[in-house]
Length: 296
Length: 296
View 1 (tube, rainbow over the protein chains, first blue to last red):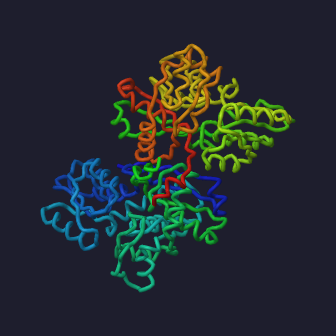
View 2: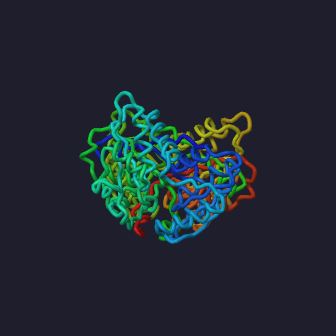
């Protein structure tokens, strides 16, 4: 249900960081993000007479779930917060999902999803779920097969499905086990604050261009991060935008803001990665291209 | 001296055009365009005691020649028209070239190059040269190896090195020889006018966003196009920009305007390609990323 995504390299970005970088290109995954891995794994566990699936999503999990569901012949109803990136909403529709708009808050998302589940649909949560975490972890398993002897794998953290799955995948290494490091927008720093507080914070008002990383970290994900993730590094909005530019210019790849966050972390904390072999996850590539072309 | 570039596909773009499309990703060639193929082939023919090379270029041939020269330990002096894309000029410098600005006219380019050649440097022309044409033709040879049974190969035309080389490459097919079709911005239609006039036109005032396609077609290139290229199709500026957006959105690849011209031609003349297996050359990916990020 998924494709093996390629790994790309760039002499120029190696020079810029003083490290040897291996970019895991999940923006080239079907539906344009890693989210298809978790969604397809979760959907593969459902019985054949499932009446349909539902979730809330700012976009990428929604498109992934719609595609995974359609591959099994299920309907998919997706709760989308108002203000979501238009091309991501189009992407959900293109893969056969039905859109239900809600208020752009955690409470608004959850209420709208609860209403759908009451009609009999099976909820497939975006990140706080063992099957989802296991599916996202295949990013790490694949990367470890593609690139030997990585010292560290760097991934963005929003809800935490990706980085907690990769951290579990890294545990399968018997020799030369890579560290796993999460990068979080300073404007959506719920993971850093939760780790500092010793429990998940609930005052989460994300303000970041990285629309895929605005969700509050999941409880399962936070527990796995605490146990298996070496560090969580912050990045500023300017650092995210600059990293997007570097990916566009030197890899010729279209990363969405969230997809550039891991590289932003390596650039912003370069001393930490110097002379290491670093896997960097480009988590997605869905953005409103029309806006970027407007100046032409 | 060059890399084999990948071929990408997209179900969505196939659906949009009614054809089966194979994108030859020359934006992923070293230096960010196909131009390294011709430049490296030309430089490989030079004697080891060559005192250095020179050319005029809006950017991509300049960077390619600088890199090819540096791989053989030669200096490279590049005449660049004022107003060239800033990131392309940076790209020439990054690969070790020395920049000499000139007036942005054909006469200005040629005068500045002549002055450099008088100092003893060996000129390596951008397209009107047998070695350059042969080198660019390897795009076609590689694509024919990678994708069997193509019905047609579509490439942009500016100076004509790429499409004339591909047309020669297609002649090597003993069975199922693909047609070769050129696409030209309507705002730089010197090839279409030259074919209609029966001789190369000299009133060429290009006005197109596709900065890599503003040069006047070469005499050798025009002769090969007349003999071996099936058709030259025009595209508007809006069609070029729309095709760039399609490549960004559906392939997640950064094409420069010239690099999107071949797809623009297939989209604008879709009836001609329906149900065919179509090779489309994305010729380059060097553009001013900073401008695209300015709105964020």
